[in-house]
Image 1 (cartoon, rainbow, N blue to C red):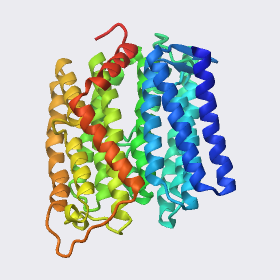
Image 2: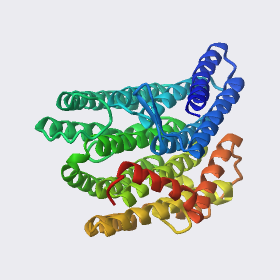
Image 3: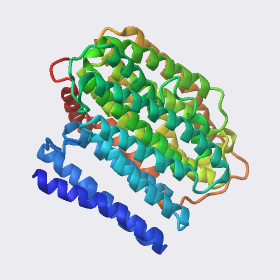
Image 4: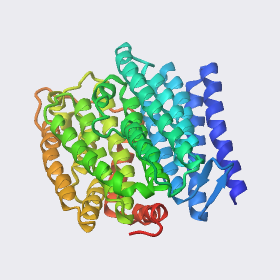
Length: 462
């Protein structure tokens, strides 16, 4: 099974990249879009197959296929497919974006399936560089955002490389395994790697770049940034903390505890003052990173299960929200006041956006509620009540700015006329909203598999 899966998976990934490269040269955007979606669907099918077969093996001592890697590879492949559908146009910029996102997907696989710190290092680079170029594709005003991301990403990867070298120096190995080596070198490496990956995960204070970059990028690229790139930061953190630094749990738990609280308050309080909807969602995504960080700070099987669930939930929420932003920015409407009367102009867009925002709040019958409930209850069970209270308080704070947007959409606007949504944007909008409701009502579909991730990361603890 292992040989057949690796062959099928590698073939689909290679053909995805090569077909995109060929069609960028041939300038056949329709064929490029169709083939790239087919190959991504093949990748998704092969991952489902491997999950059903219970795959658990290593390739070349660099990549590991197991419950952890297959889950995250699967959901992020779905995310990349959605962002490609969202960004589809007959413009050459989409053709280039499709190529860049295929390279980014390879980087995603290297991180999610990493068996070595080297794989994480290469994967993060292979993800961040195409994303920077994608920001530059279609708007001159995005130059500032791309330069800011490039500079900070360079600092981040330098910190990670330094930390990686210290880990190798202290343990003599680059494999993702707990060596039980207790040394000052490893403590320094822990600090460097948390800082480096905190940038990718958008944890405070490493997230000051997020609002400017998210606002400056084209909306479907922002969907890639917030829906995919940020999740890779958390996946890499999970791998490093629970495979390499597990012996240092007494040190990294209080660090993540503080980062989670600061990130939640910073994101939510800053969002209160925003008028630009995309910028508001950027700060909201920072706050959501703080909620996910609760799962890492609590560091139990249940909390890691909750974090894995919430990573999937926020990916859908963010990409779904960006689909509405794409629709509205296409009509040159960016501020909250521009959303007044949206329910009359397009009731589907208003309904999907309202459900997505309610899921971000944590309203029952949505994935957002299930994720937050699991995260907060995991903190309570671990006797970290202040952390759970901080999460609840921040959820209450967030109600104000989410309801402000929903209220604007369902307020009458004089002269409002029906506006049509392009088919590709509508598909993403409806798909994300439907999944948020389905997995909110039937969460065990995801929870049952996410629970195996907690057991994989912490096989002997609870």
